[in-house]
Image 1 (cartoon, rainbow, N blue to C red):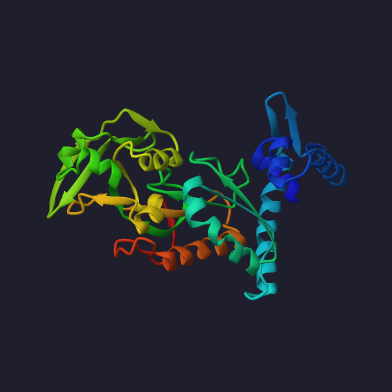
Image 2 (cartoon, one colour; image 1 turned 90 degrees about the vertical axis):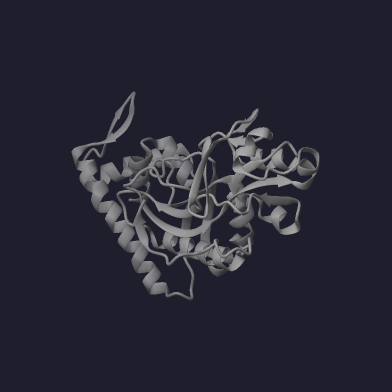
Length: 305
């Protein structure tokens, strides 16, 4: 059942094989065996891919629910102290995962010795269903209001630069003076930023000669003293802690950025996914690398984004 459900959700044998970590022939053979066992065609094969037949769709819906219930039953039977088993696929932005997730993975795996974890690293928003993702860690606003998501933490945003750059170019005293500086831009962020102080708001159009599609590029450029950037403090947590990167315009505030655990739409969040999300939430609360009251881990509730 697991293989068939994954084929339907991935839309192809090859996609399911990639998620399951097996060869494509094994996936095709498993589905063919299931069809022979049930004596019914479950998939319609065409040049455009695979789609479930009417019988296949009915089987998929029941099988998906059965697998979710089996997952819950296994967790209940094992109890909280015996750990999880099977495979867990998570996705996250590479920089955030490198700084705030991967260092904690050994402890999570030690607590669940029968669990395998696949980590998909991508700054882009990927399709959770087709990629077989159980839980995705995403930053910022969730564009799709239908997503099933849980807020894990919030962090401040700051104007950031290295001391070397500031020694060369000086420090801005107001948001308007950002126009006089080299700005390192993130291509997935807005160019207009709204700063607040004492109830007043000022909008500033940020321009720069360098623009990066991934957070790692932002980090590298700032640490190469190329200019100022506006980023969440988590992106430069080690450098803020040791003083290599400094916050500027601290009298002004920018909107905080939220960390979300996002679960595939249309299915219950698996027990493994929920336990992992709770683990990340605890670690972000314990880690608190920014020593700022604006970094917080709110109560974990399931929300629509």
